[in-house]
Amino acid sequence: MTLKDIIEAGPLNYRHHYMQTQVGEEIVSHILECPQTLKTLASNHPKAEVVIFGDDSLGIEIEGNLWAAELPHKTERVAKSLPHEIWQYCNLAMGRDGDTAARRH
Image 1 (spheres, helix red, strand yellow):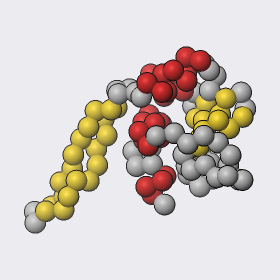
Image 2 (cartoon, one colour):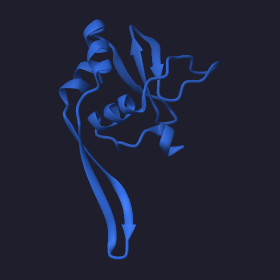
Image 3 (spheres, helix red, strand yellow):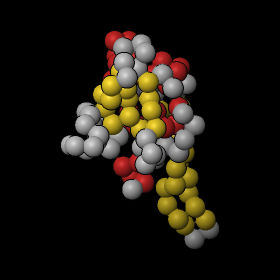
């Protein structure tokens, strides 16, 4: 999915568990706007794509080269690290759970 597609998906509704009460689970909802970093990146690199790795985490490729990763690694997945809200927004725009891989692992 291109960053342009991700941006066009928003604003997005993010619902998540807030707390367990005596009568059930409390859910909270937030409206998320697209982070400016994604807008700038898409403007500068219109063909940038969001990719899903085998461990279910995300990355951003520019012209076939890994540029940023949700879970970067100094030898296996050399890439920039970006703020949590960017990966959360990408996950939601792709129809996935808004919790990022960093929080799932």
